[in-house]
Amino acid sequence: MSNLPVPKLEEKAIRLRRQIIQMIHQAGSGHLGGSLSSLDILVALFFGGVIRYNCQDHNDPRRDRFILSNGHVCPAYYAVLAKCGLLDKKKLGSLRSLGSPLQGHPAKTFLPVLDSSSGSLGQGLSVAVGCALSAMIKGEHHNIYCLTSDGEHNEGSTWEAVLTASHHNLGNLINIIDRNGMQIGGETESVLALEPLAEKYKAFGWEVFIISGHDYSELLHALCQAKDSHRTPSVIIAQTILGRGVSFMENKKRFHSGVLSEEEYQQAMKELEEG
Amino acid sequence: MAHLKSQRDAYGEALLELAEKDERVLALSPDLASSTRIEKLASKLAEGRFFNLGVAEQNAVGIAAGLALEGFIPFLSSFAVFIPGRAFDQIRVSICQNKANVKLIGSHLGFSNAGDGASAQSIEDLALMRVLPEMVVLSPADASQTRSAVFAAADYQGPVYIRISRDKTAPVSQEENFVIGQAKVLHSGKKATLIATGPIISRLLDWTAELDIELINCSTIKPLDEKTIISSAKKTGRVITVEEHSIIGGLGSAVAEVLSTACPVLMKRFGIPDCFGESARGPEDLYQKYGLTKNNLKKEVRQFLKE
Image (cartoon, rainbow over all chains, first blue to last red; front, side):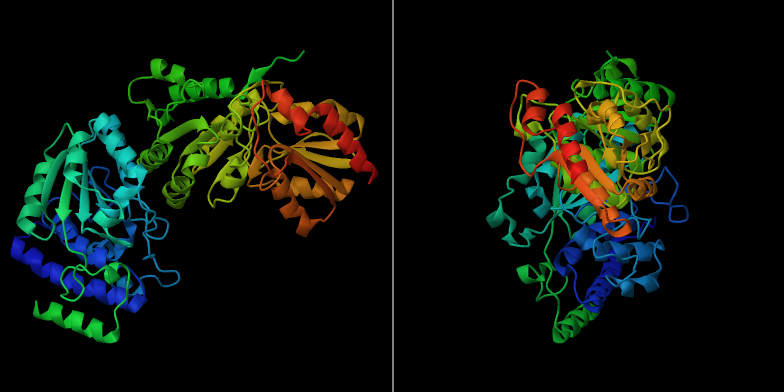
């Protein structure tokens, strides 16, 4: 994978934000808020020299794995995959249309390049634990990255997976939480409080990093440290902003899954041009 | 007296034999290894082949999916009320929508766990698994067929559910090989076709022959052997189904779905009516209450033949 300096990553992220907004606008539905809050995490992971991903040979068993557990933010992941050359860029416009490989929630049968289907919250971390356990059994040295949302930490199954990962000393597992503080019904702390989230993970035996999920140096630093943790699983609590990058969308619950009017769309695209 | 053996004992033995031959096979259990007879695998196999994943079925299903996506063949066994009951959506998304090569084993079918009562008695699992695209649903009739079903499931690439019983039951099938999707005519007859699944078939063997009823062991619930079922229904013009499962959604429903369009005939379904079970000192008390004893089934079928 490419190993770009921070300013290049920031530039790339602006272009990808435009692409995400365009894709969802064209599709007529989709989850803008989480796609934009998680994008910098994905950009750091895929273009900051973190993930070992052989784009020429995706079947290479030595490559790292990536499980998108909060599947509804897949527009961001699709845009990143296209940038990596693992997905035909022309397909981005087909998001959510009949027969498209870009299903509204990621589906491996439609897009085999995915490491797992997802979309139903609270399942991805368990699948990632399975992948990490497999590497441990086989003595393989790749890492398993999992992106989860804060909202899906409401699911009991997420905590079953958290418990299991430290029990088996899965140092090859890195969970990145897109901690945008918002879920479909409102602020995470008012719906079902997660804090103190870091302490919870620490108590479950994980190594914990708390960083800004929009600051590339912090992201890259935490990702590299997490990679070097061999005895315990790592969680990166990436503090992010729902709808990041478009002023009127930031931290607005409506944009969890709400669509933009034509006027809002034009304004969003203009802001990102200037940015 | 025929030699009685439980399907769960046969499962444990078959899985050990399979795991010894094939390194890709893993044994997983959400803390019911002893009840599903795979505890021996923990001591007999090398480290990393058996995992007790704790009382966390949803997570166990996700882990099994992840392991399968990495090339393993995980056998995940529990009570049928938990696998599939507790983890339906994980089975639906993480296993079936990934076409993950996971084998699920649901033990203690129907009333075979009599004592614990309704919460532990699985009467819905065939319905739950049958409705999932990609899922193959097996319901062997006895211990020996359980063994062959385990080997057939391992050979098949994709998700499989195998439903087994806790209790020692009588032999039904003499088949060495389990062919997925093939029902077996145990004896032919002209008056009616009786299609049954699971160990309850051992209660039907002798008297159906006496009454000139064609008896079919339908040990694959999905994909259903439509050809065998339709051709027998055409011949006899009357079909009966028997299963230790809810009357809704299981074998009887599957057969009715096929025959209602391909060959509508008089039909009678025997199973557990639309209600939960309850505690009893032994399964026999429950079979009695719900009319699934040999004598009652025989009486009801005779009556049906006169209709």
